[in-house]
Image 1 (cartoon, rainbow, N blue to C red):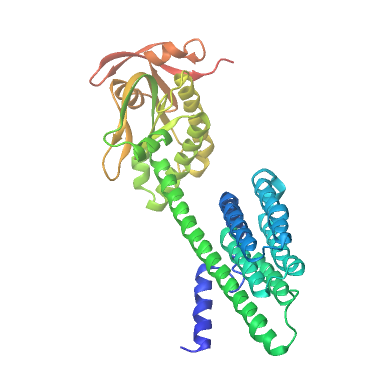
Image 2 (image 1 turned 30 degrees about the vertical axis):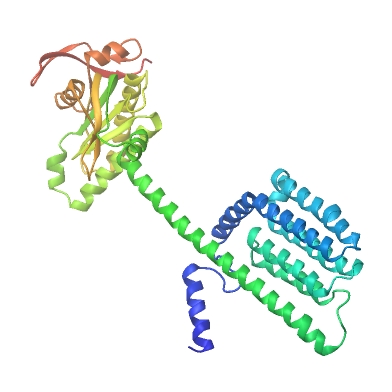
Length: 429
């Protein structure tokens, strides 16, 4: 494989990751900003460990200095009186000073430059240490900073440049060309190249991992959105953490059913796309009204719409919430009538009382309600009148002092016999 093929392969890989070839910045600015924030946060969390390692190496090299240079107290002063306190202060600042935390890369480069110059140029100037020994200390500082402080390419290149200049201008470097090239230039160039490669590889791994985690998070959010569209949020959260059937009972809720009068024959006279569009517009408006009032939509069946107030989140004012929703639904149907071939007539029924609720099914699961209150609400709708909201006596008792109702009427309800019901006329003037 030739150089051109390798370059093409590298470019193809970068195009797949949507990042630049050399400096590894993402094409999309919002993604780049998000990565830098995540990467810097990880760097701040890792900084105490990184600086602890730095303190360890300073102490180790200090011990070696004491053995190798018994008559050079300047090395101990540099390491323990200047460098070590600087590292400790830097650690404290990284953990406590907001402006330092916000500019982690810049401050990491400044700290690395200080260490390289102090342990390199200054050390070589005040002691008789061989340049190779000093360069080793500088190299450890460079590689450690790149790996442990998570330097990105711009910062890494700046650090490598500082390292290269300091290494090639160390006091005590011999002037003859052969020695300079073999003992100083070649090692410095080689170590600098290795440092850049390490920085490049580590950052590319971090960016690739970030993209994968971001994709996982996006998929999780999509699945959560889908689950929350199917189930109430508290029930969806329980479904992810609990095993077995999810069931609960409530003594005081209100249930609403609505139905579009004459929709079946109307749907037979319209194209399928038109039927779906009309229902989608209406039910989307009903969904918005439910969300606005904190009411839980349960399901739609054909042109019927079912909702509950008081579950899964308790609501002491459940009956009034559904009364307001019913009035809003009537007003919404009037607004939407202009888009329909015939005027819209809604029948709405409300009943209040105890219910049992739970999630049924294993694959296409659904949150549903059962009980006499549900059956009564359904009968209030089916035995009601167009453009009217019929409520059970239990709902009337909860709302009689707050809303205007019709006179009581006796309705023969299938399966329940004669029932006293009322029509909700609206709020008092």
